[in-house]
Each structure stands twice: as C-alpha cells, then as structure tokens.
Amino acid sequence: MRLLFSGWKANPRSVDLVHLLRRDLNLSLGKAKQLVDSIVARPVEVVEMPNETAARSLSERGIDIGLYAEPRGKRLYVTGCRPAEDRGALALFLSSHGGFAPDEAARIAERLTLPAPTSIEVSERQQAQRCSEAAEQLGFVCTVAE
Image (cartoon, rainbow, N blue to C red; front, side, top):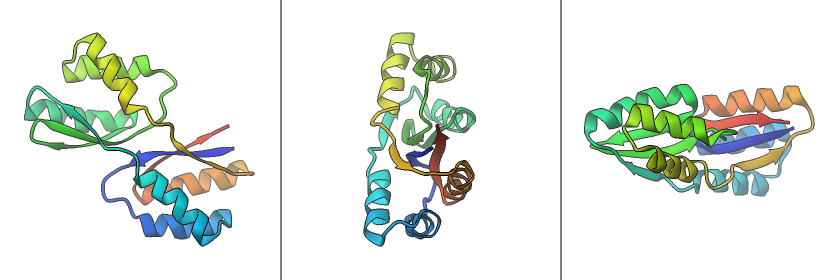
C-alpha cells in the first residue's frame, strides 16, 4: 500500500500532517517534516482562463474530478490534482468545461499531473485508509494506491 500526496486544497494544515504521520505511521520527526515539505513544495500551476466566470466555474466543477484550484481574476491557481490514470479524461474536462482547444487541454492536463505525487509506503490497508482520510480532512490531496 502507498499513500500518494498530490497537492493540497484550501488552507492545508502542515503541522498537523506532521503530527499525523508521526502518530499513525511511526515516522521520525525529521522524516515526517521532510515528507510534508515535499508535498507543499509542489509547484502551483497557473492556468490562464478566458474570463473570471470561467475560472470560478472550472474551480467549482473541478473538485468533482479531484482538481483543486483557487480562482483569482481570470487566472486559476491549481494547488492539487488527484493522480490521473487517464489524463485524457482530465483533458476532456478542461476542454468541455474550460473552453480550451483539445490539444491545449491535453498539454494543461499533462502539466497538472506532474510532478509525481509524494509517496509513503504503508503496510496495512486500514492504516492507509485511515491516514488518507485524516490527511484529506487536514486539507491535503491524498489517495491510497495498491
């Protein structure tokens, strides 16, 4: 089992995530801090939208597919994106809801799913699920993978 951290939502609670990783996964303070630093160091991707309404709409609809972004004017600041097995689905979403041409949507989808998520090995499924749910409540984008 692995926990995949691929960004954050609004107002992530980094200190609390360090405590969670130490408590639930028995990580040292240094290792927990290093992992949290790598999660929050992910670049924020800026997507230029046609207008403010499109930016707000894409931000609101994106949550349903695991795209977390904050609209500021006609710019969309993407802070997290769930690992996409099918970037095509994300590209289709960006094309249909964001008004991007298909080739431009594909390029944006590729940028949004890179770099690879920060990964933490976990021995038990229940432990991974519990930790993932807690991390989500703290404002992080976390997925359990086999």
